[in-house]
Image 1: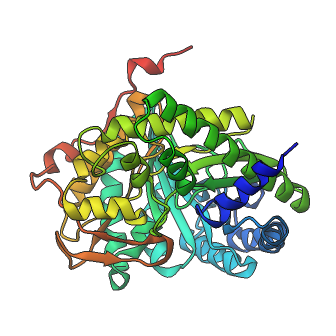
Image 2: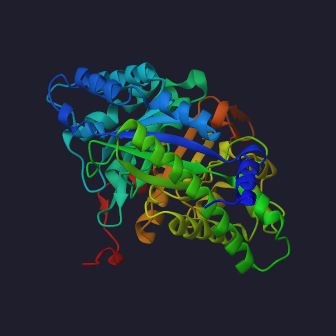
Length: 447
């Protein structure tokens, strides 16, 4: 039972420390829609199953007094549904109409899983991504190019560099915004509620309710009372804070599940920052004693944070899943924006940090004239980190058309703003042109 002090502490977390439910995401299986006429069947199924999602989310928000920032939908990877002659862009347009009809913020699952090889339908979908994202507002796309069990599909990595560049070109009028809705994964998970990488895995049921919780400000405030204390005290403080945040997320998830008559899937306790002051993962790391995020010591601090968050979440719920840890999206975290502006946080340091965070290189703006092969090489490096460490990694990188290092890009809202940072100028063309597959590492053999 909650006591009075715990109730007031939770109220303070919500009002003063920017604790929120970042998303309620309804996963919907579209496998029954596969084949001829898929677009129409998908629109009907999504709008029917998710018709009450936004209303229920808003009702829970009012009744519980807990901010719920986004309501979203994830669907079966669309590449699995394409019939002979089916236009994948037509399905993207149907998904966008369904998102508009249901009132959600985003719909994810315009996806293909090609970690070991690609079918003709996978390739059709991947090649359609630039057009699909340039013609839709709420559709998000993802491609899984690697896994610990399969290795890295370098043919897919090469193709994705070209796709990212073309997506930027087709959305040049909004500074390449289409790339903010496109993720390349290694070890993608089936129950991730966060965009742009959410999809409803083939191993999931007909529907699921997955909730993503976020509270960087809550963690930072807890650490302010522990200044100068040893790291084991820091870890314990974060763990206890994560426990409380996760319990709130599970409460909301179970209530949404009951009201929507859909199974409760997971709570994803990811510290997902926003550009708002007081909502920064970088500021948590600086609260541990760093002068600026990105300096020596940053990776160690992030490892502690990520691990303690996961431990606290697992203590609080048997249904912790998704990604659960700490996100480091450059444009969405005011502390990281400041660190990049100061030159402390570079692309190389961000890559090192992805070895210990929840995902990978996220919302990174780079010069618009970056070659496709360089983008592919960045993807390959990040995939390698995920494969050998048996963790999910991802790249959401934005080559901003017509802009160069030192200029800024403004996306607005949760996507924020970021300085365009440099990439290495040396050519990766010959490396990427090899193609083929980097074999799975020896540590993948676990049977």
